[in-house]
Amino acid sequence: MPLTKGVKKTAFSLQLFFAICLPSINAWATEPSPARQTEIRNLLKNDCGACHGLTLQGGMGPALLPEKLAGKSDELLVTTILEGRKGTAMPPWKPFLQRDEVVWLLGVLRVIMP
Ligand code: HEC
Image 1 (cartoon, rainbow, N blue to C red):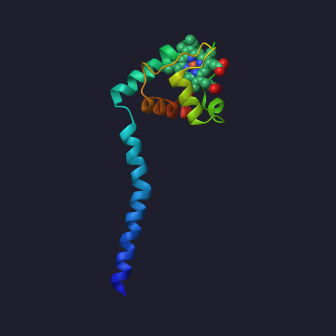
Image 2: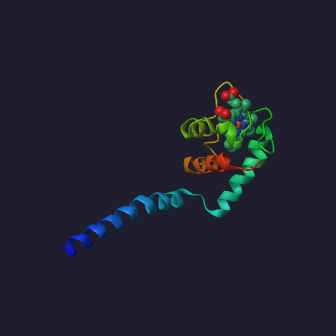
Image 3: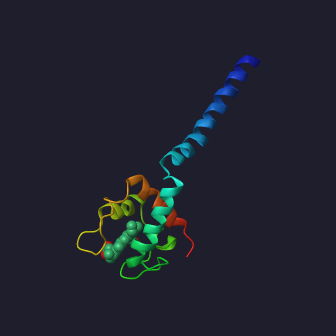
């Protein structure tokens, strides 16, 4: 029956659309604006860099290079950046960064070139 086949095909294409396109649309929605991305990159260099090293290879704080972060979960690292770590020099960045921005920043850290 060609009609059923057509309907099935459409349903399959729709499924593909939702599976492939929606997650990326969602990723765009939470990405900071280009201007804000520049601000956050500056914060990373000037503020985070003060402790983690200008090239993030470590200093007073540990290195934040992709291979160092690879084994650690997004949840742990996002919480560390938002809340800081009590009893250490790592301060909370909640007053300056939204959660979405920290998630984006962590994405940058995970792929950054030294
Ligand atoms: C005043 C110094 C200081 C500044 C500024 C600072 N950090 Fe940290 N950070 C630390 C220290 C020290 C640690 C290690 C804490 C510990 O012993 O667990 C740390 C830990 C971390 C960790 C966890 C690393 C791991 O391997 O578990 C992340 C991620 C991190 N910092 C990101 C940032 C980001 C992003 C910024 C800027 C927005 C920043 N830090 C600014 C001192 C700092």
